[in-house]
Every structure is written in C-alpha cells, then in structure tokens.
Length: 388
Ligand SMILES: Cc1ncc(COP(=O)(O)O)c(C=O)c1O
Image (spheres, rainbow, N blue to C red):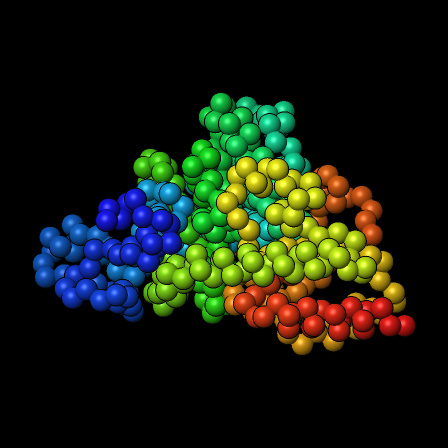
C-alpha cells in the first residue's frame, strides 16, 4: 500500500519523522535545551543546534500537521494565540494594513487592535459574511487578510474561496485560523490560502491537558519567513506538549466523528426546545451559511452556539447552578462537555450581531459523554431556568 494514497486517518496514524537509532511506535521525548556535538564543525553546521528549535517529537508533530493540513511546511508555537500572532506578524509590518473578521477569537482581535496598532500596523475589522466584497476594503498597503470560519462564538461561515481569490488577485496574503476545521473538516491551503493556523490545544490535543499551536504553508519562501520570525521571537513548543499533540493526532479522526455525531444530535434536540430561540450550528440546514459550509467543509464537530429566548430574572444563575455534567469553563475540543455564556465577550461592530436578539448567547462544546445524560443535564437546567 502506498501510504500517500491512504485515507487521512491512516496517514495520521503512520506519520513518523526520521529518528536516530531504535524505532518505537511513539516518538521519544527529549527534554533538552543543550544538544551535544562531537566537534566544532557539527556545532556550527548541523540543525537543530539547540532544543528551542525542536527535536524528534517536534519533527514528528510537524510531519503530522503537514499531513493534516495538506501542507509542506509546519512551524510549532506554544499555543494557538501565539501561532496566530506568528502568522500575522510574518505577513505585516509597520505601515501595512491588515483585515481581520469581526468574529475573530477575542485574544486574536485584541492582538490586532492593541499590539499591532502600537507597532504601526493598521488593523481593520470586516463583516465575516462579506465574501468577495472584501475587495472594496483593500488599500494600496493591504498586506494580509485574516480569516476565521466559522466565527468564534457566533459561527458565521465566511466565503473563504471568494476572499482568497480577491486577495490573490492583488498579491495580498491570506491566513486562516482553522482550529474549528481541525484539518480533517476543512483545508484552507487546498482552497488557496497562504497559511493555515491551528490551536492544537483544542481537537488535536483533545484531552484539555496541553497547549500548542501550529502554522502551516505550502510556500517554501513564506515558510522561511515564518521560521525566521519564529526564531527572532524565540517561539517554540515544550517537548511534553508536543508529545501530547502527536498522541492526539493518532485518534483525531475517530474522536472528531464522535464529537460530530453527538454535536448534531444535541443541536437538533436543542432546536426543538421552547427555551431556545436559535441554534448556531453551520451543519443545520437552516443556518444562514449552511450552503457555504456544505461546499467548503466535509463535516462538523462538537462546538456550536445557542440563543435562548428571553430569560426570567435569576434564570441564568439557576441554569448554570443546576448543571452537573456540563462544565463552566473556557476552551473546547477535549473529551468533556462545556458551556459558557458569551455576551460578556462579544465585541462585534459589524453585521447582525450589533442588532437586537431574543436572549442570551451560550456556547456549548459537546464532549464524549452519552448524549442521553447530556440531555438530562440540560433538561434539569432548563426546568430551573424557567422556575420563578
Ligand atoms: C479559534 C481559536 N483560535 C485560537 C485560539 C487560541 O488557542 P490557545 O488557547 O491555544 O492560545 C482559540 C482558543 O480558544 C480559538 O478558539
């Protein structure tokens, strides 16, 4: 069997970087800053010369991320936010203009608004549903368009191919945060994007026990610039975290299928509840961007939002207090179900989110528990929410 022709889940299981000496199923974790050389020529000739550049486990994770994203080059970072910042700062510098979506992950938006602006980059939000209309926002100094689809908290699906085509025609770089798509559900590089970024912290690690980020590209020149930026900033990933990400890659496809099935079942169940005004899940046929999702994604996962109908006084406190399986916590992509109220985090300035809506916005991550138990947990919380 030619491994290159195998299915993605097969390739993720059989990716192995070149190793010195004995070959084991899993890569060795070398906890090392110092790498020793026999002679002076080695010291100044070989790579890696220092642990920060990564060792065996990092090379294995980079190969796995290339398989996952259809990339030729991958660079690791210590978390997803750092990977986004690395990709963006590789593409823009003082005097440049960057476009980023109104639905960006909050800390990414903050990075653009504060850090980038302080360094002389003009960062401008765009409506995530703008599609080819993004062209009207291009300026002579526009150097990059950041895309995050579906959007954080609000789950709009952008027309990435239309935005990428418009940017390409003007020589503008495109960077996609593909954390929701996780590589198996969406491949921005195949759609023509220059860079795909993932927070490995979510589905790749999959167990809420490590951080990680990765920046992928097919372009050798761009990969060299990403590597240089990374080395200038001293960006790297701890070997134990890299190991947990490699381990996560082996079971990613199986876990994602389980999250997808449970997520869809819970989304349909929630859509039928009287307490729920709207379910924000792009795989549901009545989601406004369902057609785009169907065209550009091969599946979904366990992360989506709901908008409640107006809630009686004290209802949300009673709702969250009653939940015993759903944890109240940030992050997603792990084995456990989580829920958060989102209104406190929304900083939208464009599109429908600036207008009124029925009630509070919640984000759910559906984990790997039995869906009957999750429904029982939410049913009890809904009863408490409505009690006066
Ligand atoms: C879409 C998206 N991108 C990036 C990140 C940042 O990842 P990390 O927490 O590893 O910095 C997150 C975190 O929630 C995210 O949801």
